[in-house]
Image (cartoon, rainbow, N blue to C red; front, side, top):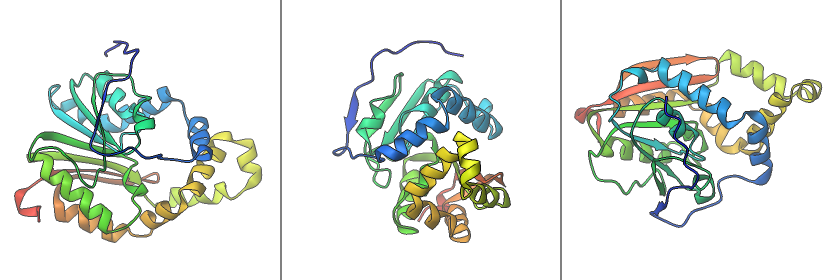
Length: 239
């Protein structure tokens, strides 16, 4: 594990003017939901489950919708050395401290060369897309373009499983929310992003069909309110 400290944020490479990602209410709920250390541990468990321990340490990894960079910190602590992150919000990117190269830009229009990345990771970004399926098609097309042949795409997103339905029901109970601050924080975040969150959860068949169109599936785990997906780029699947 790497323990190198990075007191200053890395310079941002701007593909476009940054935007404000989230409102203050959402941001406050996010901070109550889990600490950065807790999120990094969560990301590490996920990626290990999805095979990250077997990836080459020098793999060129691109983290999309990377926000504050906790996913990048997770990858750094796992020993990966060639890291890049993309997010629309320069305010969120400015919170990152680490060795990764950061880009302010739109994940639907990546300003990176063709076949320049070995692994693309998205954790909790796709369900923020404003227009489905069009925006998802654009992101997946760009992912396929920047990946090397046989490159790997990893996505973890919310999914409407029975467990998530129970969580949603719990979020509607004011007594439970008062008793469990983490549940209340989750409820607030879901409420503030309801339009994109509900749009995402309502289209599982279309989303899976698009993933299968663009990639050859290696893993597809649906459980505990999450879709955990790993696919490989195949030229025949790229439109």
